[in-house]
Image (cartoon, rainbow, N blue to C red; front, side, top):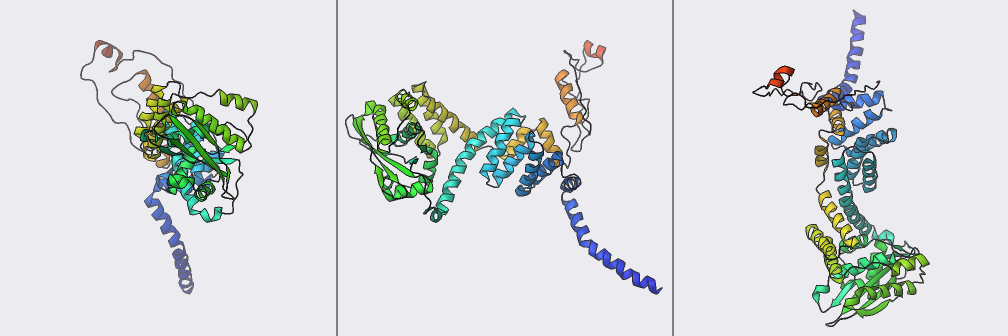
Length: 456
């Protein structure tokens, strides 16, 4: 009797020690049994790409993006050709503001993914995301500005600020953006220079709210240059009075010393604005001691320039785009293209603006909606239910039967967890052929079904 009394406290203590873990496990299972099932599957077989993929998709559904990305990255390493892992890794990375990770994963999906509609969405999302990334980088640069003061970049790394238009005719004001864009394109022809994109410079200008009058100040130019990691900043001014004469005047400012190192200039007329810009760029090359190779010089001299009216419409498009008015930008770029059908830059900008507009509407919800009724969508649905199955055999049969003999009913029932197809609608009248064949809608064509069952 005494032995029994001694044992009972030990058993009770053991039960109490195990209780917290048992309660936690029960709560987790009760909260989301599918998650528990997948976590247990991964614990049993951590080297299963399908299990890691399914767990990552489930974590994403629960907005546990860090855990989702970790699991999906493991799945991608095990199976680099799996599109679902890449797609959901990209969405997880983007939710974490990891633009580089998102871009890498999305790019991989474009390579290995199966859904054409989803690829279109991701292509557009990448364009919109690139703009978001530039804004984020600009904010981060301003936030870390103090750390950048001692950083020196090569003087051959050049950024171009938007030009300032001192023009009597206010209709020429959009040339501020167009001229900077043209100069960036032409400076980039020299392999001796690393010219930063106009959009990257514009993001910095927007972030620090740099006024046009302040851009010519060497100290302000130096600040902008350091924020964008440029060794040299080119500022410019368009001077046009009431007549046809015009002047382009600029300054190249070294961001380390805040001192101008070159003052390029060129005179010309509005009607010959592209000749004036060409002389201006050649003066920049000369004062920066940049020598073009024979091929570079030939390409520069043989460059194609648009008509002035097309260029003015293009410049208006750049201004609208910088202001976030993408609908206006698209219309103006298309107008420029209409005025000059050979204006390739206008076509590229129109396509980019349209993709950015559409990409801004792409979300994880719209991507998941687009995946429905696809093989990749079935992988996602299975993961959400706690399964690692790719595509059910019944779904495959349904799709094949539907292709060969479309009917109002589907005689192959989907028995997966998630519901079965219970539609029982039938035609009211049966024709002679139907009676003869015993089907409601006899097939008008034949087909061959090949079923491949992989060994588990």
